[in-house]
Length: 400
Length: 218
Image 1: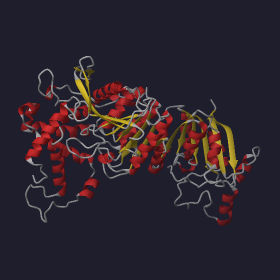
Image 2: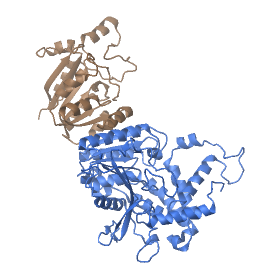
Image 3: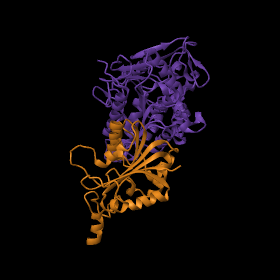
């Protein structure tokens, strides 16, 4: 593959760095011992476990200005600081910061790595205290609700009774919706972006392709690659490449790459990356494997597949929101075909039927699902307006 | 179809920044502290007025994306939707007031919309431009052309207003739907109210705008 390659030494370092983040993350971390097990939907208890998180801004005196950000499938807690492994800026730096819509001067912002993740919260790459080896596939399958339970445990630890807002995009939005259902009294408002109340058959299908790519890689070793010193890099890269296409749109890909060739005048009549779009995808795949654990990818995609809020409530979504009094603002994007507007609309109808105060905005963009991470002035204005009005309604005073 | 560009830039602009007169009239009909749905809420001017002055739990539906996004950015609870279809999704008697401000004439099915509003709201407030006003009648009579006025400045081929009615037409429809007219207000171009005790034909001739407060009889 003619792609940007990281030097071998550098690569080893990266792998070591990632491995270290799993158990000893370079962020804040809370460890829950045997006295505080986490009850999982799979019917087992996870103990001990840890939650890695970052906070920005200051908690005010009456603890009313806390906002929880839930990250997406391949995100982590490093919302607004340089990433300890990649060295890149925080993944939501355009949204979170001083004077930005999620204003670190006014709010206390929390983001934790999800359960099953690989950046410091307990997941399949974490050391199983029973064996001293990484859990691998012996780690229990977790759900979105389990992730939210772990976040609630973190809030208990931080002494925060009620969040001013819980927000996030994609799988982050699923967690937001799960918060609205499982802990309605603990959120003053909720802002799910580009998300859905259930994972569609098409989305499960895409995830299955990704998982099969990982598991078909001989270096996966039935999930025991960490103890056997291998890494299913090719499988995970293919999974990422396939998934990445679903985060964009035909229009966005065409605008960015068209049919342009990569550093050449003519096609090579071979299977090298002739086209820029191929080169781009290969780069996305290879850079992803530098920072992500393959088994984590299996577990987290599975959690998304299992997500179905209505399913827990007799297939009537409105019943799931029966106890919700919080204000909700749902946002979708016109060119998002992974979590299309129609899915958002179903949630809005259900919230309306349940009597919850709901807003819904669809933003016109050709950037696809990933639009929530990008420069979208309309999204910024909506998030700012929604948070301002929530803060005003709740009488939030600044920390200083 | 509802649009964010109101069917007419409306009357009283005498004091700059003051809320539009028809909106003030509508807002004054709403009991403080009640639950309100504004159908076709545009950029949220009425919702904001209601929230600021009547302390209501105010929601809105708006068809235009720009209108919705502007409302949400203002912190108003507004969803994108079409009055001609989406009102069916609301349960009975969800709201104390359902308001249709300057939108009735732009709906595809005004009667159905009104029926749905009466179902989901205990009270219904409708404000609309009166097509029976003498100026409009005069334009048709003297020039034989579709009227263009300060409030209705868009040509017939571009206007979103597809179902104009007069005050008398509206009263007839209210009778047909067997609803109670609790209050009615009509006012002229300068914002002056038409005499309260005048007969409908008088209102119909001199009222440029009309606001009705309706409720179910049973």
